[in-house]
Image (cartoon, rainbow, N blue to C red; front, side, top):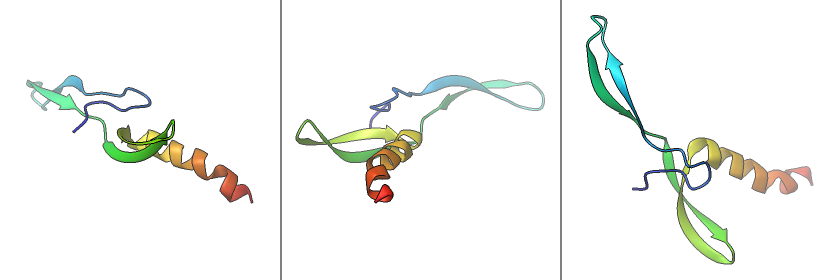
Length: 68
């Protein structure tokens, strides 16, 4: 699985889980990545997109169709 978004380069981040007693343990915050098949430069490519970029890309590509 990919580790970062192809468009916005969002990637995993380190942090701490903090309990009520203020005990800290390490954790990873990972982006919500999805695979997408996209035509880039005449080639079909399989890339990883975060959910926000995927929604934006869908809105941009469907905008001319929705206006008709």
